[in-house]
Image (cartoon, rainbow over all chains, first blue to last red; front, side):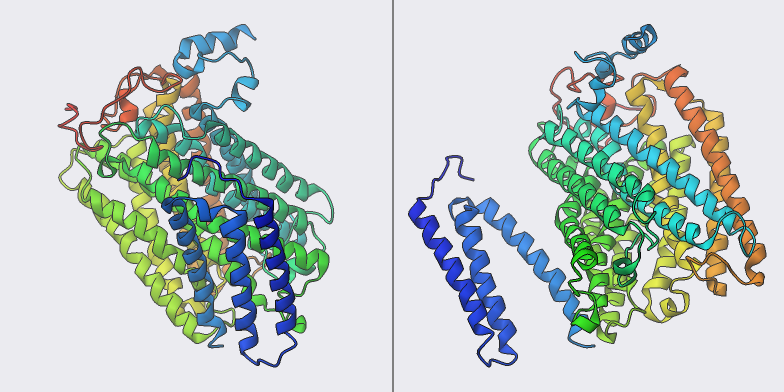
Amino acid sequence: MSEEQHIISYRKLAFVWVALLALTALTVGVTRVELGAYKVLAALAIACVKGGLVIAVFMHMKYEGRLLRWLLFLTLVTLAIFIGFTFFDVLYR
Amino acid sequence: MAASELDTRVRRGGFWSDTNRTGIASWIFSTDHKRIGLLYFYSTFGFFLVGVLLGLLLRIELMAPGRTIMGPQTYNALFTVHGVVMIFLFIIPGFQGSFGNLVMPIQIGARDVSFPRLNLFSWWIYMIGAVIVLTSLFTGGGPPDTGWTFYVPFSARTGTNVSLAVLGVFIIGFSSILTGLNFVTTIHRLRAAGMGWMRVPLFTWSLYATAWIQILATPILAITLVLVAAERMLGTGLFDPVQGGDPIMFQHLFWIYSHPAVYIMILPAMGVISDIIPVFSRKPIFGYKMIVFSTLAIAAAGSLVWGHHMFTSGMSDTAVLVFSFLTFIVAIPSAIKVFNWVTTLYKGSISLEAPMLFALSFILLFSIGGLSGLILGAAATDVHVHDTHFVVGHFHYVMFGGTGFAFFAAMHYWLPKFYGRRYAEKPALVGWALMFTGFNLMYFTMQVLGMKGMPRRYYDYLPEFATLNLVATVGSWILVTGLIIMLVNLFRGLWWGEPFAGNPWGGATLEWSTPTPPPTENFVEEPVVTHGPYDYKGSGIP
């Protein structure tokens, strides 16, 4: 775990903010393209990239040590398992 | 300060007299884990007594067919409030908050928890949430009538005060998460020198596993309750098929938290039993490592079985199959524990004092509850008894016969340590015997009623169920009589009873090596652990 404070420049923060806005626009744009079943996949993929940016930069995970990264990973895996298990129901109804 | 209060504090010594605040401020602003533990104890136990009173009223209503003492709407509200109070205000925060706080830091040789202020904050959040839940009963459209599970679509439509009640539960959830974080950090970082993971007492192990469930599962309850509020206030249609929503999704979300929450309730109870049985059998616990393993296995596997609450909900057959199979898997670590407790008793020098009697009844009652759980976990038999009194009997065997009796065991085992005075043994035995008899009379009869087809949550029933319902209600009176005797004896003893000092039970865990009552920072000298928690020879206990 890094004890020293890491200060991110305004420039970088603004860049990530613009990227998030652009990805939001992309999410809206994708809904207008005929992708069929892949529409959900595309929306989820974009959301993952956006979430990743927020976690890495805004939540400083990029600058943290291995322990915190593993803990976050563990939490996300747990959530994925919870959501995944509901598909035993939703996919086979 | 009143002279009598000063007198009591000076007489008790330890953390009771070592404070620079007076009166109630010395409690509600204290960051000492023992004071917070007692705060939690009295607040959660107070709510338990409220829940008991409500349960008693429900049983009186069911004593005879038709209206007895209340109408159907009041009945619906009472069983909802009974459930919400017992689950969210007593049994989930109860063990962690009270005995977790009181005992765990001392068991691992720490001076306090890692984050004492956060600890106090979590009690405050708990109380704020509890006040909001209670406010919901007397304001708006009246007390919620959905059952403690808040199932949609009814919870989204009913005019009763569901929104405020779910807000209260939402806030209490944060208290649970904070306690979980605090305990995980404390157990990782503050163990005394020499206390490796395989020397951690089993009660602390159980709190550790529970804390992880609290951290990982509680946010899902929070999300679910927010969605119910959104459904009610914004009409989002998330659970409404007409608007493309899915009502079964609510049940998934709710039980993703609430089934692991069952293990939040039972795991610390199992930990207490694992600590008490070796002490009163004068034998090291059988299979320490397997109990640790089974604790973690229950926490992990128990998080993946929520679907067994939903076999008749209309979810897919594949899901029914998967969740039914996984439910049977959880029975394995539970059975390992029961096997190990019984084997610890084998050829032990058993002394049947009050904590041990409660612990032994735990084994029996939990086993009955667990085995009836398998009847519900098997999809075919579940369809027959789903939503009947069999289910009510089953979970009261686990939650009350299990966790409740373990809580009473802990009260008799540990509270004298913190008060420096003890209860009288004989009335404790009478109280226990009455409770045990009344308990079985009430809940076993309810299981039989369920098998015969009496639905749960119904205010009225067919005449053929009348006799058994009367029997169950009489059982509830015997149970409450025993409870009153137990409580009067216990608390009279804690205030005015015989002095309790040293290590009268002969425990080898660290809490028995501190003065009674423990000083504010628990130990006179920082302890160094040289033996296991159940190594009586190594610790020089005869």
